[in-house]
Image: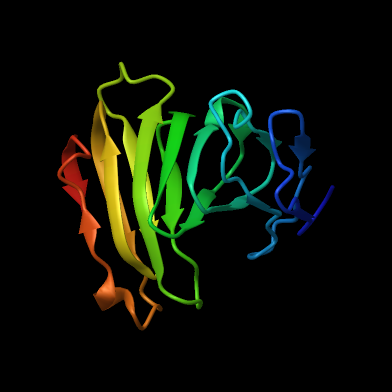
Length: 174
């Protein structure tokens, strides 16, 4: 694909799919998008093959494990959930996990666990974009820096409650 492709996968996205967004234009906002409901995916079925897609929006209504080893070129992987458990494995250092929807109803995210593909580095970073997340527990290990990037446009951002005591990052920046 090229320039602002949208891949709407419903509840069918899994490890057997390959999505390549192709080259995008250079203008601001020219991003590809994948949307999917991923409830119930496991470390095997959740090994997603997505490349050259800038925004990935995943809805979870239960428990899911997303193996991100073959997700490349994403600016953010956003999770929309309701008091559920979302596990991300094999994330690249510098990955951004978005919590909640922009300009939508508040989200009770539940637990989001992050694990890096290579946790042996000395400067590993995970970014969390927070928008409309009324309650989220962030967990992870072997992360040197966690950046919590709070929305500057969300009028309900003051309602967000993040529990980070099990994130185990050496440094947390807000």
